[in-house]
Image (cartoon, rainbow, N blue to C red; front, side, top):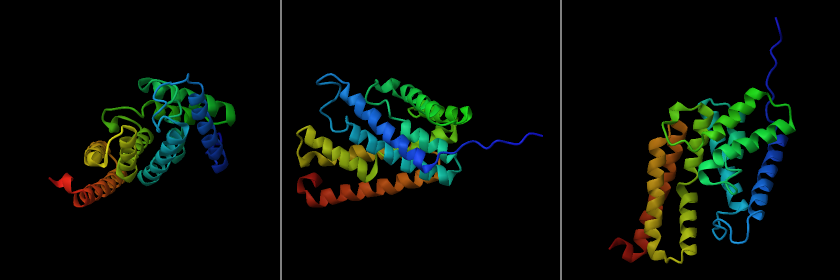
Length: 224
């Protein structure tokens, strides 16, 4: 009877190298654009913002995976690469493109088992899926839930308020922007399937509701 060979796992040092690669890839994607390229003026069309979003998703996806019994290595590597092609590819194509980048990287660095690479790439390919999350693997579900959750709560509110400045809008419009975050949060809460993600969604929604109430208390015209 043969000896079962345990699949390689991702060491912390290897994961740190992956983080560096993803940031460099994002930065190179922006640099390759022609002057005045797609959304160049938006602050979140930058390697720095996109990398920060990716790391937020990695943390959230890892937390969900650990508590829900998913493969943590598959989930966190997929989360790290899920938006790697976001700045060089159209929105509807970036998931498949990101999976290709991840496969090329994983095949070139260490002797990762093909089964591991397939699971990572499958999760990346499906991370923009809009249907029932129970149709997907648990790892893909964790990634999608994390990706949605990063756009709500305090972080989502801060980004919406930042957007106001770039659109030359005044603080009198901030209630509208915060309402958008709430709507996004309600949508995320309705789509997530895991108890862990549901708990995070409700916690983040509570923070946005508090902030919305504080705005109404402090900006008189908003309550009229």
